[in-house]
Length: 297
Figure 1: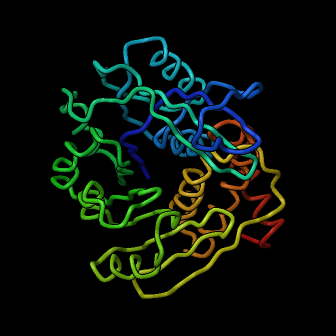
Figure 2 (figure 1 turned 135 degrees about the horizontal axis):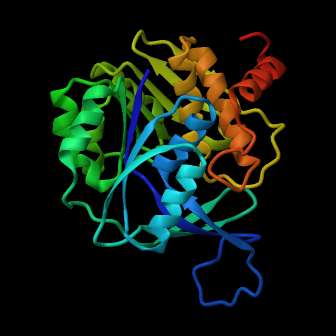
């Protein structure tokens, strides 16, 4: 199965604090940090590559040192990366992190919402793939007509979905499978039921330490708790790794329940690393962890 991931590469500064700052002027005298590639496209493409699923990732980057770092880093990870240059430069974030995984993300630069793209190359990629992962990055909206034209199955990740935000509607409308977080939802089950009633194949909602909830098109609910054994280092990329673990299960013909468990393991391994994916992630490690916690796969 050929996977095309559209959208999502940044170069980020990750700053670790004992607690997130209060909204008042202050001086913080010590704040460990590191710089690394970020965003949801890279966060999905890297673990998929580590699991030998070789996706194509398209994104927009600046023709600047940060963009070329992204190219080099993705090449080292074995990701097939295609890109268009953004006149706004490479998008960069500063993420403030607390020990519980809380995060404040500050967009210090932002990528373009509309820009010229190599549409011929992108249409060829869409036509040749079996499944499109359409990330909610502004520029990707202009590719929705092409995805519709070729009638490809679409998975999207709404992240911290804000109920009623019109920005998400185009992604919700085209998606067959939806992932989201319950962080900003009082009644996530009602939202999930609404989308299934609209004809979605599957909706999966993650709850951080609360695990995940899935609703199938047949109306079956599944709850999957986290695995508490993984040592917490950094939550960046955990949601994307959960998505990838589920997708890996789907690509291998696993059940919804088995795929949710694989997603749980990938997310657990991710939080034990400062990078977007656990450095040791592999098919054999994933299967080993599955046997350890759930028995045979």
